Amino acid sequence: MLYLCSMNATKTPSILIIYTGGTIGMTENPETGALMNFDFEKFQLYVPELKRFPYHIDSYTFNPPIDSSDMEPKYWVKMTQVIADNYDQYDGFVVLHGTDTMAFTASALSFTLENLAKPVIITGAQLPISKLRTDGRENLLTSIEIAAARDANGMPMVPEVCIFFENKLLRGNRTTKINAEGFNAFRSFNYPSLADAGIRIKFDSILIRRPNPYLPLKPHYSFGTGIFILTLFPGIQREYVDVVMQMKNLRALVIKTYGSGNAPQKPWLFEKLKELDSRGVILVNITQCSQGSVEMRRYETGLQLLQAGAVNGYDGTLEGTVTKLMFLLGQDYTKEEILKQLNTSLAGEITLPED
Ligand code: ASP
Image (cartoon, rainbow, N blue to C red; front, side, top):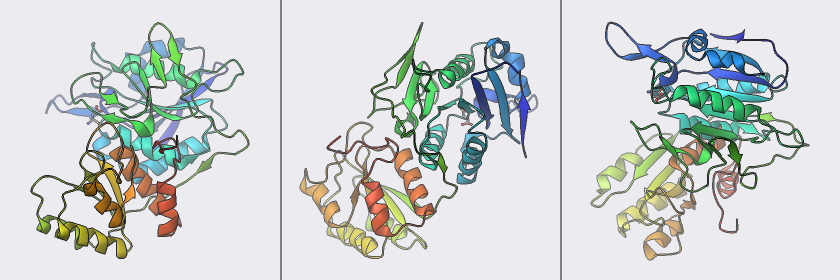
């Protein structure tokens, strides 16, 4: 299913490229014209510069490579496993991934790779690497350089799960895809970029997380299910929420609220949410706004959600919140423990008020 292949045998630093699929490695099907994945060997044809790096570069390919719309938690487990199994042999990891669900994968890996002390840089492209005007070449080459970058003490510059795209290095679990056409496809609205690539790659070391060097990597391999996302809109009907109430095995409800975490003041909505809470369902309040944080005590319309049992999702992204819940539900935690973890920044995914 997966195989490991060696590209060259130069010495340090050593980088493992994990190719999962996505537009970066796609070519047109001559019969249908639709884009489909090719295998990693072709990258060397289209990016001969790969051989010019003074690094040892190996690759690991998903077989078959997938369009990231087909991404599933089982593949996050697989990526976690590949990184954990190869952790000691490599200085950094570059994950090639479709852009559609890249932010979900980046968020998920930031939770499964506890105590990560090496760079995991996820990148892809809006135009296939086989196209002349591809953005994939730059994204790939700079990601490799970032994965290999060390500071003056020889420590990795960015020991985090990040997305590198269109000259910006973003914390993975803060990132959202915002553009289906332009090359500038990702944003981190609530956390600044960790590095900008121009003539030089400028790292902002104050913003980069530093792991505790005494703790070993602790990979996690399970994700829970039973999560639903409820987006509020003016005119929302109780029947719509009733569908949620009837869901079997519902364990967590992410409520996408207005502004700073507000909801319409409908008694039936309050009662239904309260009932879900008493049934043990975890309610997380995140805002529909791209930027800013939830503050449930700011307005009456937010306070009612707090009173119904909703927990603050702070300034987390949808991708970060959903994958964090999947991760937490996959561990052996009680509801109280999960609520505590939701109020903790595990991998820099939220900004707590005192931060
Ligand atoms: N559908 C593609 C994917 O996410 C889009 C891309 O890679 O840009 O795999």
